[in-house]
Image (cartoon, rainbow, N blue to C red; front, side, top):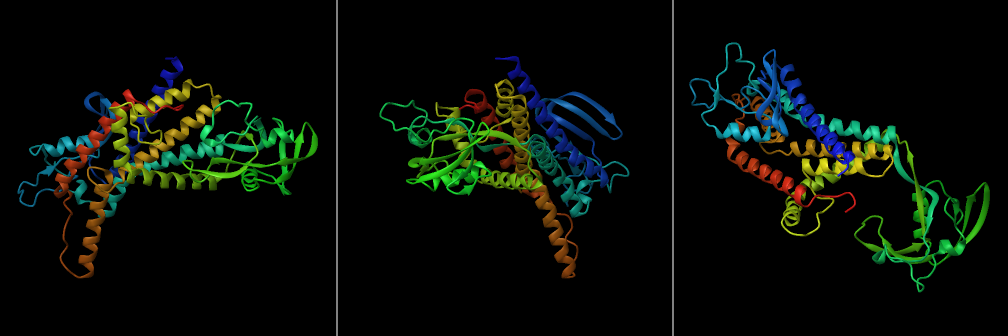
Length: 432
């Protein structure tokens, strides 16, 4: 184990902790803005490692670095049959919510002057903002990290410049094996193409990008095509007898199709993109993340099988904090150029932050989305009451969903434990 691997793990792990801290800071900032009293802001769970009181809030770090929470008084409204006006305690942290909710006797009395500083008494839209601010912070971090990579560092983009010429034609199903005497030479070899050649024209079409060239090659199987290349300051006009080959589909990598084949590998160069690429990247990430959330139960079955058998771990499946940090170590210890490492590192942090933000928006308690849903339901009920001139229905008591909360919290804890175990015994690896 190299020191770079360890450094990568540590740096990525603390990057995740910083993201968690900022998530809770999002909640804290708007809670204080709207006058909610916040006794605690903690990163981590379990026994307190360090803390300091500033004003009315205790800021601290706990020993188990697997999350964080802020504690707001009166997050759940008092029972209607409670004459003392005692408030049930709760928090934004998933595990802390389970612990505090399970303690039926753990009640927090509102102090003098705190009657209007409880969470449940705030306007419904204020509660939505307070609870949305945490996930939004993660989504904002993802946007920042991805913007730095896309617009600042640049995206590795294939160029219409040849990096390597394949010696023989091999189908996608046999990819990776060595050439044999019976394998036919590739069209690129027959035409005399060389590494370093820049293809400027293909079949009469001016070439400005490799994607454009690739589409033309795949559509020209079985024909002899005229191409123009730049080589060492010279312009060469060549004819290429393009063949067909069974290649992976560009739209579905799990499928193959018979397409035109030339036998070249392009060079890559970092290209600085604009804001539009950031938006499209975030859009694609949203689609993939939503798909992952929908398929989470099936994906977790795969994690279970990989954890308790010799089945290979799905590289596109869910990973936990341990697995993500381990990949951070692999990135740091790889032989890739430093800029490539930084770009990969930031993109991964951005992707993980986005996943955290979207997961927390799932409209089920004890996730932030469950409290958001309760606040929206309260706003809807009160709005309908005003329209129909009926009495104010009062606050929505999300505590009525505690049985579902317990079940959901148990599922989250079980998933987290399974991911940690799988990340230890059968981790996702960058190189498979």
